[in-house]
Amino acid sequence: MDRYSRWEPDERHEDSFKEENEGFDHDPGERNEEDIPPEEPPLEDFYREELEDASAVKKKKRKKGWTKVGIIFVSFLLVIQGATSLIQLFQPDVVDFLTTSYELSQDEDVAEWRESVVTLQVEKPGRSTRGTGFVIHEDGLIATNRHVVEDALQTVVTLHDGSAYEATLVSQSDDVDLALMQVEEEAAVDSLQLQPEDEDVEEGTYITIIGNPLNFTGIANEGEILETGNPTTISAPTYRGNSGSPAINEDGQVVGVIFATRQQPQGGSVGLMVPAGEVWQHIHELGEEG
Image 1 (tube, rainbow, N blue to C red):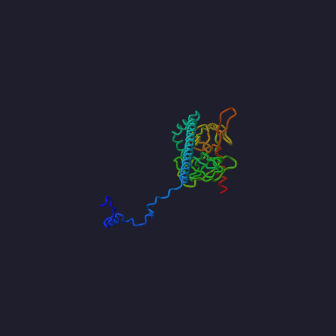
Image 2: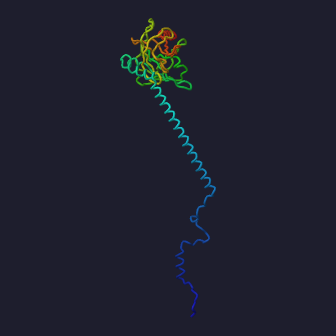
């Protein structure tokens, strides 16, 4: 027998081979689509994504930068405003009139008069202004200065209790700095009484003025009539925001409407007011016009 003999597969080996290779009866040259790896995107896509990511990061950084700048700017304005308010608050004149206002407001009559004095927030083209007015009739008729409400787009009246109402211009005088406003809604507020038109105010008359100077509200101050006429001069200190403030005598009657401050040649300043007689005349003219 030969040392080496040729091995011949028998039927058993053939059956075993068939069993082991079941499920692979397709052509070896063919590949299942599931076995084919997905095609990789070109390198340009990666470069484009990296550029887009970098651009997005830069935009976010710029946006954050501008946001920080905006926050810093607003904070700066608030600090300046606060500092200005503090400087304004501790000016000797301001401290004096705040102290005087507090003392006067302890008087029951002054406290009652304050409730008839209102704040006017006036929106004009390109700016907003603030002034004073006072109720002269229980139906919501308010007296103030012409220059306070002139060219107004909208006027909001705030009462002593904080309630606010929109007001419309009823009339304005061409001769004196005077205007009348009407609250559109019914407001429960007492009115101030005008000095009778047949009475004249005398020099030396003690007066109390109530208004909204320097962004304060309901500030009371005192003085006297220095010189009668049109305008009438008073010694009571007046500031920006006092325009439209009533000047009230000891009987609780309005003897005039504050409208300006005038510097004296010898130094110092005096307040100017429209006398009550001019207010009466304008009301009569308004009544005649219907």
